[in-house]
Length: 423
Ligand SMILES: *[C@@H]1O[C@H](CO)[C@@H](O)[C@H](O)[C@H]1NC(C)=O
Ligand SMILES: *[C@@H]1O[C@H](CO)[C@@H](O)[C@H](O)[C@H]1NC(C)=O
Ligand SMILES: *[C@@H]1O[C@H](CO)[C@@H](O)[C@H](O)[C@H]1NC(C)=O
Ligand SMILES: *[C@@H]1O[C@H](CO)[C@@H](O)[C@H](O)[C@H]1NC(C)=O
Image 1 (tube, rainbow, N blue to C red):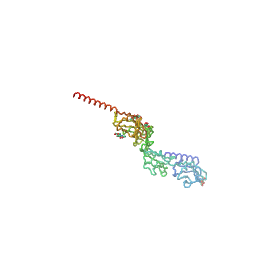
Image 2 (cartoon, rainbow, N blue to C red):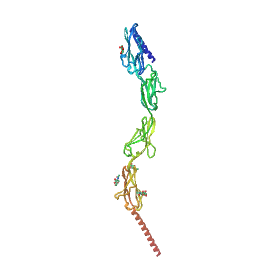
Image 3 (cartoon, protein in one colour):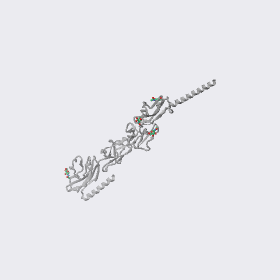
Image 4 (cartoon, rainbow, N blue to C red):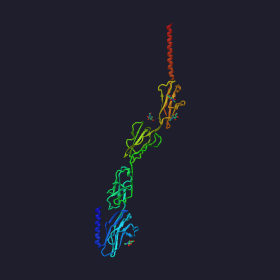
């Protein structure tokens, strides 16, 4: 910086020497040929001039394309600090961006007129640039304090949050980094250049959202009863920040061990295109983001289906004897459980029972026939295959008669043989 200033002074010096030599004593010299300054500040265009001795200066004027004295707003904004001898310094206060221009000094003497070359003035404002305005906790944010041109005077920058200086934040670089931000870093930021702290940049707002895992319950879609064969989607939604990257699904049946539904991680949705009764069980999901892993609550999935595998069994098993009692039982696999049983006898009178069991208290020969049942659960019904019941009543009486006849015959033989012996 110092080197460059020296350089420009040297250039000005050489140039003014040339002017002095070339113009026989006529010259206009500016301390700096090019000035960069901040909007709102005050600048002096330091200037001096010479002319051959013996002349008298009648008029001095500064031009910015046209005679500055005729520019509206000149009063109180632009002030000539020079005189009519050798100083031609111009002061501009409360600089505006529109004051950027080339300014040229010109003077008229009794012996001639002379114009200096223009001095370039660039008015800039301080702009705070933020690489990101909305970030998550732990991320890095870079603030950069920029000006359109390089200010000669800058040696350091000041940084502000919500209008207050950030403690120990002064930097010699126009870049200020917030490493690993937290939610407290949320706020309005601005910057200023040293020496011109009353002319800070406009404020920029930084929003830091905190990172966390969070679960909403596992959801079914469509909601309500789950019927076998329908399409069901489980949603592992989470308001985690940053959003969930992957999900793992787990389920178990009948209180057993949890198993992974898939072997690999999936997205937040899991769809059963045609759900089966074997998919009944408890489910939960594990979601992951860079904060870690979190578990959803467990949800119970109960897949409903109509009655099936209906069958009739008889008890006691074995031969059914006339006069005994027998129970028929109708079994069926159903969810929800069977709520209505209907009993049928093939080609016979209709039966009145509507229970899971059908009782014959005293078996008679008319009971013989084929029996089946129908099980209903509101989701569907199914008939069992027919069960043949054969009543063994007649065979039993033949045996009894035969035994009776044998006993009678034996008694008769005994009586006859006793009678013979007596005689
Ligand atoms: C510049 O304008 C002012 C005011 O209008 C006038 O007094 C002055 O003579 C002008 N100077 C030149 C060089 O025209
Ligand atoms: C029920 O019936 C299905 C066929 O409809 C069969 O695959 C299954 O093994 C049966 N289940 C039982 C317990 O009998
Ligand atoms: C049939 O008998 C069994 C056992 O005695 C009894 O539990 C059941 O309730 C009876 N069924 C009917 C429909 O009376
Ligand atoms: C079961 O059998 C009865 C009588 O034959 C019949 O009316 C009914 O429709 C059958 N049910 C099914 C599901 O087949």
